[in-house]
Length: 629
Image (cartoon, rainbow, N blue to C red; front, side, top):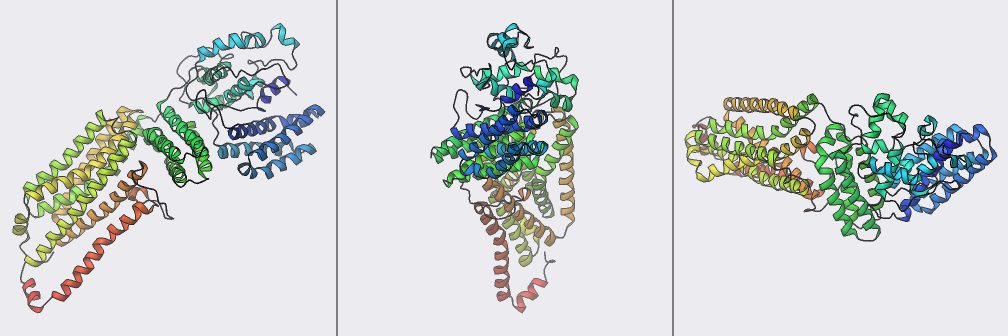
């Protein structure tokens, strides 16, 4: 067996990374046990097949002691580790008998992934390591044994067994990643001359761990591809070379990323970790506050870019945040489990971060966002314009135009100057309040149109009567309807486009132009078609559109206020249809149901009343007027 390679892998035995705590903080004993168990299994995964191949009695005995230690660590975790104990015992039986090297290695690898998920473990630094700092630390603390160049060929190395690792050796580096190097620096390797350096700060240890990987690389020429810090910390050199080519390996190891997206996700992770610590200490109110901060200031600022890359992952993250918050609000013991799953999802998002979309991708995404966000408002505005033109109320047409144009201007200003205003809780609160105001105005508009239809039915001569019905109060109402119908979508679009502009400003500009033209065409089409529709059809369709849109916005508005904790969470078994504003929560779903049923009940009551009031005389009188709407 290659003892130098074994030295690198043996570092996993006591791999107790400090990344679960804040800088300078300490981990809980449970977290350290999770990491220790993962480290043991990683060592077995890599080294057990080699021990079987060499049939060294010492190495086989070593493997047996390690799997026994893994079983003990699982027991120390209590109920959280009990589910893994049967699988570990199954591996232990084969290791004790010296059988099935491939199966043991495969099963250990699967256990590692499941343990990382269950424990919510982090395996990367919180900020880009400083390679210059790492170089200085290597010179002071490591060069005496590993040599100034990292080859380990200094005289004192010849007296050591095993010898210090040679960081230029491809076999050694093939089994090493910065995460493992960080663990070795933190805790050393028992039974060897490799000590731990617990007096170094977490930042210093990560800087030193990443610097080790630059020693055998030639100078960097060019710009490395976009790769997340999370991926760089958990990938070996062969992994990166396979993914991005040998020519990019030197730059990937020497020019580390500093992406806003990953920093934001690290903010979210830090708050979730703090929430778990507070929850474990019994401070559920503090845990709830930390989860809310993590969502609003960590996930929300980068949601657009994440959704463009993996919408399903964003949905899972949002659900995980809500479940964790609900567990904290209910003082549930499941907070730790929910929180660890959330941490794993955040790390999954970090692994894919840093990938910028090209201009064409941003252009098409911008185009579809504008269509999606503008469709509801366009239909409302188009229906109002069509109805007013049919009634020849041209003065009010200008009022509607002033309303929706004003909302677009506010959205444009928000895009240019409102990045701070539209962040986190401010954005959600603004969207929620705006949506609820829009709901009120849309219900008003539906009643207004319905009243106009009734006038036509009972009085005839719709155009003359409508002119009298439109006073100063109606003018203000029409402006407010058009303004609020577009305002929420305008703000939300501004937030989305700000995120996309980080990848390609040109893509956002051209996509906005294309989307604006498409929306304008849609408005003109709806307006023209609405003008030609019979009045009864026009009013009925417009009323239905307004009520449906009000129901949709009511769900979105209430959900937004739930996300900033202004409304409680009351989840119920139901489907989630985000595009329709339907969420599986009683706080939003019940009001939506009541609002949707309201017009139906009103129509049935009115129909019954009209049936009782109908007389032959009134029927004859109604038939002599203008065509019914």
